[in-house]
Structure formats: structure tokens, C-alpha cells
Image (tube, rainbow, N blue to C red):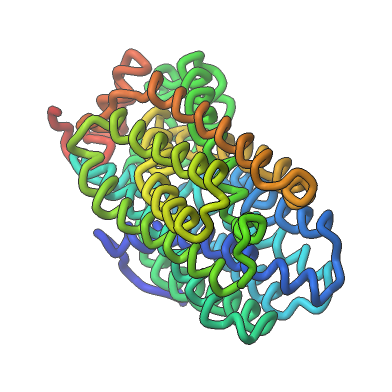
Length: 447
């Protein structure tokens, strides 16, 4: 007997899939707000704290999950990932909630990270493939919105539960378990992506048209075409340099605030509530409202420039105290809502053919989160040894590189069906078995 919802369609399907990002970001924030409590409870060093962060959903754990999940998503379908990934995730957060020592906590963070990493590429892929052509950014933006709401809720809970200290952190992990269970139930009613069915069939049924136009399926097909290598380098540049900064901000921001003179855990968490509140607003009123209608290159540049400005304010005007931190929170929050991750999740779903769309995302996520993990491993020690100014200048440099890459290489895919984009990029259409059908599951239409 089937367990879970029987049918999940429309916006309900989009939201249930987008919740992968709520769960991912929520996990990172649960870790971020609890690290100090775990450190005190288990007597672990800054080096061990860095190890926890590096192997978690913020970095290597998610990298491994994406590296595995992306190719599996292309081989067995998007729905296959959604059937199992949250079950693994629930086991991980439950173990974290009841961790009694460092080893249990480390295992919990690794399990959680792998599950999160497997789900995110499938999420972005599925949403883009099911979205209407003229609203693709709006639908993909739902994942960005969920990614913003997760930390907003997480930091708000951390502020409210701060008096409970470690017990409060355990309750936050339990809240993620409940959310994951509900989302898993709803997802059982999802249909398989029609575009994946049409273009890949079931292994042996992959058409010659697919192989000749795209170079094959999975990672082998991905790396067989030069145009794919170029797209990988551009997108890794955009997302990688930005996420190296965002990854440290997401999990170590309380320590950054402490270096800036804000020592109260409640105040630190409330500042993060402001950051993520601004991100939610910018995603809804900025990216989701305008990314299908105005120049995506311009919107990206505005978001990236605000990110650079935010960290300049924090680094160069630290002595101004709370006003500086409030301005930083708003600028960084708005930047995150209309910046690199929102456009990365859109463009990475558009620039690769269906037979390896998820594999491409999994590979890039693996590379980017691995880089984040390397810095996470040393970040607490680096911050303590050199101070905010040196670390801040490093982060400003990374954000500036991401800004430059996006400004120069932003693709022009707006208003085109995924089929039209594939024809432009690969030189011939990817024929689906049966009737001529658009990649979004609807008849092919013009711009």
C-alpha cells in the first residue's frame, strides 16, 4: 500500500519541491546557532568546530550528496530522489537532536549534509522543467524563497529558545524533522518530470536524437561537449565565489558579529532575522516579480553590487557599532534575495540539456560546496587570529569576482522555452519520442 499523498500538482508541487531549500538552509542555521552550545557542552576546540561545519550541510556533506544525487536524478528520474532523500535527512536531524557526544554529532551532520545535497539539484531541476516558460524565474524563485524562509524561521526560533541553550538547539533540529516528514508525505504524490520522460525514456529507450544532439546522458554526456564546459566554468565562477562568502556568513555570522562587538546571542540571532527577512522580501518583490520581465543581467549586477557594498560597510565602519550592523544586515539580505544563488539556480537549469541537467547541477554543487568546506575548516581559527578586517577583505574580493563574472557572461535565455535554448546551444532539437512537445510538457510556443 502506498504511503503519502496520492496526487501533488501545480503550485503545491512546486512548493513541496522547493522545500528542499528550506530544509537545506534550515539545517545550516540550526548548526550555526548551536555550535557554541555544542562546543561548551562537549568541550571541543575551534578546530573541531571547523570540522563540524566543513562536513555538514553547509559544505562537504552537501557536496558529496550532490555529487551522488545529481547523476542518480538523471539516471532514475527526479521522483526517485524525492522518494528517499528526506528519509535519510530525517534520520540525520533526529540523531543531531539526541546527540550525546562529538562522534554522534559529527555523524548526524554528515548524514544530514549528504541528504540535503542529493535533494537540492533535483529541486532546481524539477521546478524549472515543470514551470511555464514565461514564469520560469518566478517558479525557480520559489526555491530561493524557501531558502530564505528557512534561516528566518531558524534564527527566530534560536532567539526565542536562547534561554534554553543546548536544549533549545535540540528543539530546532526536531522542528526540522517534523517539517521534513510533512514534506515527504506531500511529495509522494508528485508525478515524474514529463521532460525527463520524453527525452530519456528508461535507459535503453533513450533516442538517437538525444544522444547525437547532447552527447549522451549523465556525466559522460555533460563533459563530451565543449559548450557545456564553458557553461560549467561560468556558473561555478558565479556561484562558487559568492557561496564561499555566503557559506561562512550562514554558519559563522554569530562569530563575525561577536568580533564586531555584539556579544549577546539573542542580538546576534535577531540581526540574522533582519538579514533573512530582507532576503525574503527581496526574493518576493525583486527576483520573483521582475526576473521574468526585466534584464536579468542588470538585476544580477544590482544584487551582486549590494553584496560587495554590504561587506565594505561591515569591514570599514565597524566602529560605528549597531547602525553599521543594521545597514549591513539589510544590504546583505537584499543582495542575497536577487543575487548569485537565485540566478544560478535559474541559469543552471536552462544551460544544460535534460539528459544531464541534474548531473551538471550536482557536479557544480559538489565543486562549490567543497570549496566552501575548505574555508569553513579554517574560518573560525582565521577569524580569531586575524580579526574581522582581514577576513572581510578576503570576502569582499571573492564577491567582486562573482560580480564581474556575472556581469560579463550572464546568458540571454529569458522568455525562451527550454527546447529553444537547447536548439540554440546544441545546434539541433532534442526530439522527444511521440508527438512534438515542448520541454515544459506543453506545445512548443514562440517567445
